[in-house]
Amino acid sequence: MSLRVIFMGTPDFAVPTLTEIIGQGHEVVSVYTRAPAPAGRGMELRPSPVQVTAERFGIPVFSPKTLKNAEAAEIMASHQADVAVVVAYGLILPKAILEVPELGCLNLHASLLPRWRGAAPIQRAIMAGDAETGVCVMKMEEGLDTGPVAMVETLAIDGNATAGDMHDRLAGLGADLMVRALAALSRGGLRFTPQAEEGVTYASKIGNDEARLSWNRPAQQVHDVVRGLSPFPGAFVEVDLGKGPERLKLLRTARAGGAAEPGTLLDDEGTVACAVGAVKLLQVQRAGKGPMSAQEFLRGARLSAGSKL
Image (tube, rainbow, N blue to C red):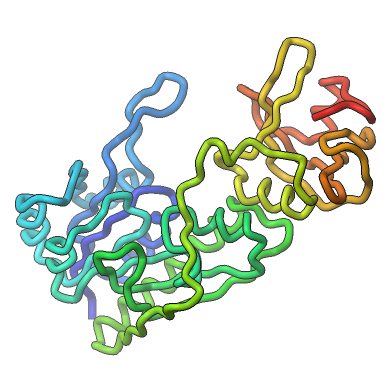
């Protein structure tokens, strides 16, 4: 049985779920997303990926600044939806909104709850060196990702996978999980289990200060931070290439051997000493330029063994 669905989401991560819901024959009666924001060099207003997708399918789009008023609840109720599906929307849903759909609000969250509740679960899992992650479908409550869980899919994290790599895999996995959850919901067969009280961690938003990389860490930690922040915001160091300090983003690294003062370039291949062990730079990005191989950067910057990064 098809359902009348309100979809609430904003970034690329949410798009596969929206398109899969439509593809499975459910009626998406409205889409809620964040308002267009300035982007690019010209800082022109750019609609969210979810808005672009919704407009392609001719679905009405709503971008309220807040949902914390009676008008927002009235408008939402006017859609006469059975259920709301929320994927990385970006606004808090108050109790009055959560109670509007007859079958509740389902949220797709990119972690193995209760681990990594919050805004940046993919990045935090990788930065912490977790061996696995996943996606959950839960029923939303007023608390931050505290609701009971209905369905879970687990995914191993490869030791060299970046947040970008895992983002794309989890987005597809999550879309499939959500449509299976909606199918069960339409049959009255979706069952929820309260989250465990133990093992709760929080995936707070990535701060700018966290993106500045310190070589005074063990190599494994450096490697995990680099891949956890790649491609955005990107872990960075400042290097002096003769015209003053320049920000250099590190997008991909690998574990390597070697020892020296942390931050010392050990060879012409991009191996850099850490507090314990070393990492090899694979892909970097200079300010205002596109990603490039570390070897290409080193040749152009004329950096060699013994240089400091």
